[in-house]
Image (cartoon, rainbow, N blue to C red; front, top):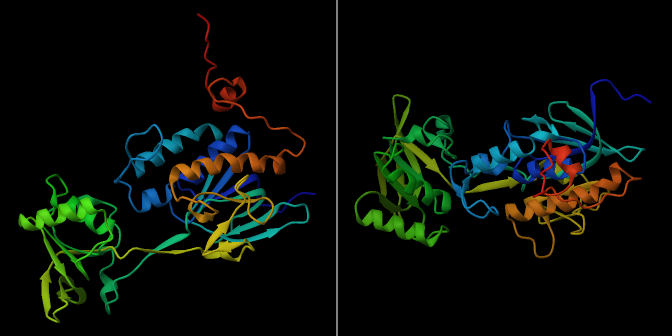
Length: 355
């Protein structure tokens, strides 16, 4: 029986193109399983690209340090031999089991799939920044009011107000104070209390810079703003003493954290625990046969939200999915170092170990 025109048939559909979703392509590819990837962002990389493209990551095995962008670029290069197809800027909206055991899947852009397996690798869902709640200030979004730093260079030479008490607020404050092409004219950090959720070393460095008069820290909350001729030119900060001070600025960077939203995944009939998907750690399969969950979106006893943990989960999930795709085939563990079959799959030459 032929399928409706325009429907994409695939062995595996990966929901989420972050590092773990990308590595899932690799692990499936080693087992000769082709995959399509759907992601709500317009580009691969997930949190690494959206939240910290230029910040260093130190806990990727055998990679002493890399940025989120470098990690994403290297993963994309690693999966090139497997020819995965990306469907970006859309999210999965409907999933339904077919009579033949496969899944009908539809996205927000109307893309339709029939897939034998589904891999949920969507982090903790789509992220929405917690907003600065002041009437009318949203008109300055992405011109003078920012919730993410995508291009540090645009803040060079500016008078910056940075609001928040977590790692992002402290990291960017320190970044814009230090000498270099992105150095700001001035940096004022505002937090509602004299205590932080950031790394102690960052807090200590911030206080040193304040003592050296290279930046300022104000305890208080942003309660208003001033504008002139269609431009934001100052924020009003009310301290614990009840006094409101006017703080001039060119740009305001707000880091109140991100609110994760699981989105349509919550309607798929998966067992959830605190908005995370419960999995069996032998295969990382969910309670729905043929649906697997890897990375930050899943939960199990001892779960650690680390990229390297997600890589391990992706490997086991690929082996767990194999029986759905090759029901009559025994899948053996092979090593990329020595397997001629895997070398062929990867498009590399089998090395000779002759003297």
